Length: 261
Image (cartoon, rainbow, N blue to C red; front, side, top):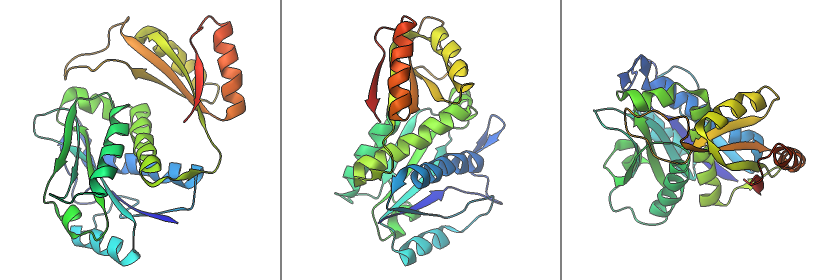
């Protein structure tokens, strides 16, 4: 049984970073709920305990004490940055070494595949959460709330879902977690932004988990152009994936393929 202590940063009287009409405490909780719900519904032999499930503020000591008392295998703290920058970064305790840095590398790389922000690197810092937890621990900072471009992504439910699921994919790889029922991605790799923009709501209306993924990095104030390279990704079960590949190829998307997620 893999035991994850999941910590949505801030909460309650502590909003965390604030900018562009949103608050860090709300974004961290939204991402954390995606992580918790995905692990609970799609993976076997995983137990998740959250430091908070609503708008409350456990102290830093309460968070690490609870994780230590519970005997968690891994402590994952979800945060959003501020201070005039842009991009994604992750933190472990200074000079902690393996296996913590191995877990950081895996999870960080999975998040970078989907987050659509600059890579600020894999960092180290003497933070309470990382110092006082008795198990390997990682803190992620998914963008800058005071940057309009980063904040625009945080307001997108599809981005929240993708970032949460990328955390889960990293955990799956790092700890060899086993899925209850394997899921598959159907991918059209050679679309333009306007095509992905049209296909996503079409397949969402049919009940699919569909998303567009940018194939280039954008600057802080740069929006996608109509012909920018994108791909469509639909996550589903094997039978639906098989049928969707056939459907898309009949529609002229000849490079469509499926792969186990």
